[in-house]
Image 1: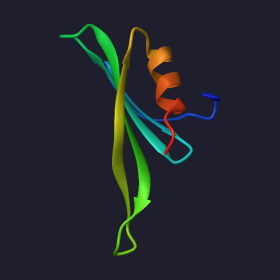
Image 2: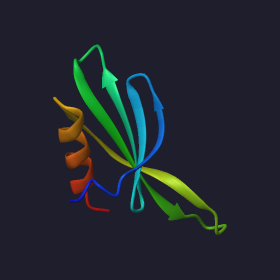
Image 3: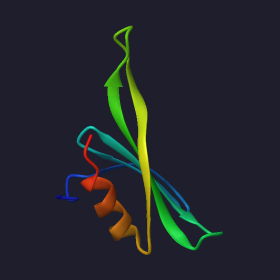
Length: 76
């Protein structure tokens, strides 16, 4: 999947928040496991008509690029 349309929302040290299509990806370095971790959220509409972010899953990897690619492969 194309990562060029990823919008960088926020950056703080070893953390990033990216928006790709309807997914939000929280990317961080885990110093205890020595790997990159990504938590994947997608936007859903609740019973009151509000749009909220719902947690889908998490992925880990050796590099930031690898984790982002794996996160984008997750199907909703």
